[in-house]
Image (cartoon, rainbow over the protein chains, first blue to last red):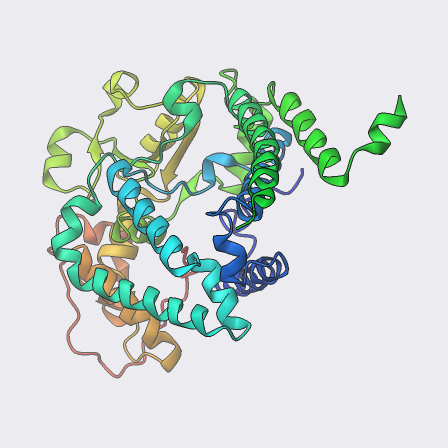
Length: 199
Length: 226
């Protein structure tokens, strides 16, 4: 019989090996972030000026690639999707958290992952951003008793789009691919438009 | 025919491939076991690899982390449930199992006193098309033995000390108390699993470690999850 993933859940390796693997995957992730130019705040914020939407394209490409991979692996029976951890859904707190992250991205020019990549290449603004992340985590932890009620408000079940809207899984997959490809096309148009007018 | 394809940029080719894969995925069924018919071979495989099991320490970690992506189901009677149950569990006695409003998409972790009822309920739910049903391995007995009243070494080696500390804090989280290995060995003429039967009132809580260097809890073959 074929090997079944998730390998960790099926006990094919233990905690220690999983940490080593996480380290290697993290290095790969950081390497490709940097190679895509995402270690530079200039590159990252230019998506907000609409003259370079590389971040949008890379992220959406990653989503589509991972989604198709997971779908086909599940379909082939190589991956037990019901064992894949779903982040619990707390709709209101997560929307607020997303807004805070977005505001931080606009102000600081990085998101958490790219700030670490920037720091690794010696950028001072990246380092300051990372320090800000840790200050924020510290403040959050200290304020947690006050924030806990809101932080955990909502169902906390891992909601999925197919489950919530009663759509077949494959329809959602196809729709996301179409949205992505349409988005790439639109992004190309925007880039042309805003590059032409200059900054 | 091939001309237009050759003229596409690499990005356009990749986009086309993604659309094609997405279109084929329209008919994909990525969640195995979503057929209501039972595939005996597949079930046997699941049983054989124990992929349907959640071990007690793993469940304890989930509860401590406040994970909410699963539902813990206590299959015993309401009276037994009232006496003791694992925190966060909901009580669904066997006789109302299929009318209890458990979601077919939900991840369910079943437990009973030992393992028999949960195994039977597991099969029942699988046959009804419930997708991800798991059993607490060893049921409440192993939960008590490994999480609430874990066995710690009398004279821990440095390696064991960290593990014992962890066991102690987990046990305290669930209102229990560790047992010392020597006390367990001394009482082992009695039926081991039965000792921890009632709520947190264990017959022998270890006296200060006796320097007997009693037998180590050798049979702990488990790999701790998460």
